[in-house]
Image 1: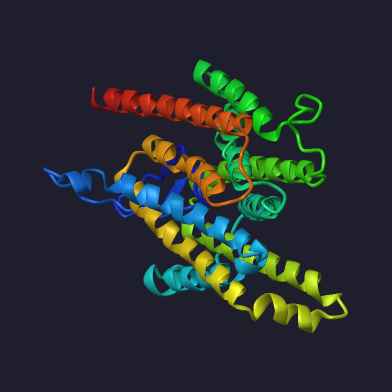
Image 2: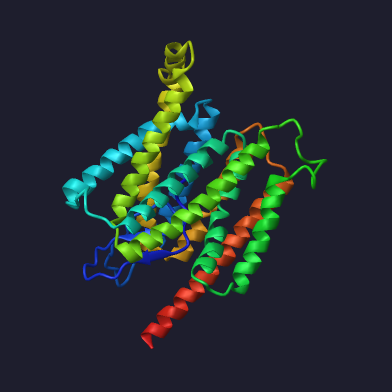
Length: 357
């Protein structure tokens, strides 16, 4: 669940193979490629295909793990372990980066804030999924795009634009329809689900935490020129540690901890669930390929297909169906994402035109 995007900030450099940061997504590496003068139809739409495939794979893996009855936080341990190893190998033996360097106090504080909000935000999303349906969790999670736009306006003292105001209003109405608080929808809300409000609060925190992570990413890249792969490695390693600590706390104080560990980890269900979660690494690779081929705004629009995929999986496969109000709310949030993305796209074109002139 680590892939959302609106802007890509590129650092000025002589080297064309420069690291960049996807502001509203799991960090990725963007490499410059020489475009063909006459690209084929497949090449022209390859970015969209990679984007759709990565979004479906990520949503599908999370959905399958829950329906296997395996704790998602347990199943993600092999994924973060392998990702940390691959990133460390990439940094040390391919890019020849150093793991240690003298940093200023400001950079250390920014790195700490970045890894804290990134780890706690993603951890909160996976935890909230226990209490919410996948469409509801992903819809509220995607409001991160709106919160990031609002926080950017506040931090950088920009005047709020009309599209941002409209998108914020649509998001507020959409999230209300998805959350369906009992004081507004007493006849629709399920009163027997006492954990739903907890799940909603947790996933709201996840959305806001990821927005703050986006801003700290931008700060690190622009002010301190921090290596992007180092930021990703810190996130993956700290996430791995957090999940191991969670498992230790979950099982160590139980009198039957050995039996519980065997029942939860040494089963075919856990093997399938952890294997499916490993596919999320492939999803990240496909996202890199999509970002190379598409503009950030187009990427964001396609990536938000997560919401549609989750609704389809929930209503075609699961016995628990989404009600019409929840689907309507998801469509409103999706519309707000489209508004923000189109607004950014038009700004990008305007900036390029002015640069050419």
